[in-house]
Image (tube, rainbow, N blue to C red; front, side):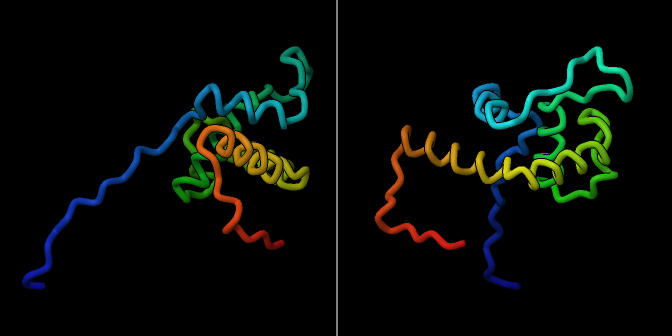
Length: 115
């Protein structure tokens, strides 16, 4: 290993909570939350659940290892599956591409779309 240079890898910090302006785009796509006074299990706010989903997807940990600050791993996983079924992440991807295009512009001429 002689002659190999050692460079420090620069990693961006993990986003632990979705920024407010980005959350505004997300919440416009989601269905309405249940009222807090609802009888039954305690309500876990969608923002908290979404943060938990991003944590699991970003870190790569198991749902059951999700830190308690995001609520139950099973709640986050159940909501993740529900939102996948409703196309939430696809709609969000399309919306965020539109926002990015408005701000920075996307060179659509060289893009390919496949399904």
